[in-house]
Length: 236
Length: 179
Image (cartoon, rainbow over all chains, first blue to last red; front, side, top):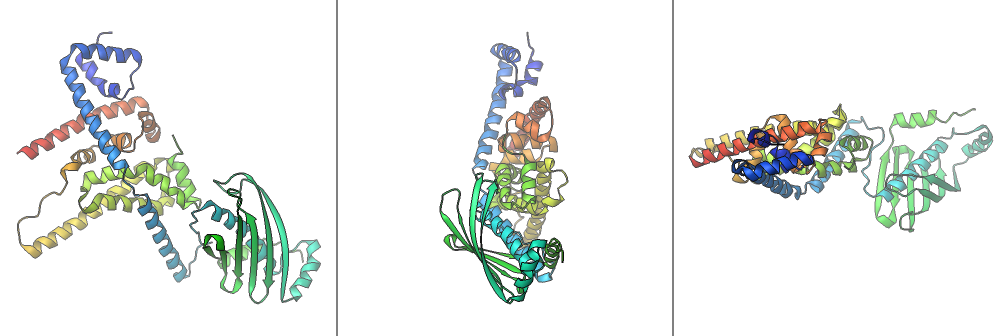
């Protein structure tokens, strides 16, 4: 296939981008061998491409990531505070949690916390539990221990598997709920201890993870508490 | 290609704000090029504007109707940030002039280094996007086609036209400089 200059120039950019099929490429090469005009054109296009690539890779080295993420977190916190002040409140405060372990721990605590909260309100029960709960409602404080096993992929970025937890719960009518949770980090096999406090008077849940020197604070609003109460399906 | 923009947008909206860093990584160079072309990078103007655009994008993501069109939407935000920045800069300069009564303030402060980016900023929207993604976002032509939802042939043609326009614009810049 013979190619003239106009045809060649038309597809030179595709040529330097490596987008031509074999026969087109061959035709361009043949034309370039004979045509100094198109060779010069090619050289100019390549220079421009090199400049673009060079500037692009220089800018690609810039690092906005940490600045942007920090700004986002600062603004998000400021917004949450403002929302708290105006009393609007968010459904549940979203907490930015960086490490997957904290996420897993938080997920577990939320599950247990909600179970505990339901029990605490004193209306949760099944028919079989009704008698027990009635008695529990008479007492001022009580404690129980539980063991639970979760299976499956619990959080993104975490290996699928089983997670066992041992929990000691102290519930007091006057002061709220305290839970001590023991579990094992599935990634490195280390033990994780967590303390969780649910303070109904402040509608707040605090979680402390001593090993990681981290804590989380969650606040419930009236809507959520109301929904939890409704989900109880108390038969009595 | 790694995850789509749509995937990350949905992850962020779903309560994983940390995933926004993937988007930052993907578009930081593109935004810097775009904004440096408009503002220059004197006193890190482009860098600040790029950060501001990303932060705004994050907080307005729930208003984004088509997560597939994230890139165009982000450039739109960057354009608004650039306009605000230029307005502030104009006011600042006017004040300075009033204060000093000295020689005229320089008409433009685009640094020579960003001549190419300035030329890119002057391209029509469709051409600009292809150039930015291809060279600053380090996308292959196929990836550009996918991201902008156009056939590969169109990407090649657009790129070809964009090269021609850039060459013309850079040539004009040099002529102006020589005068």
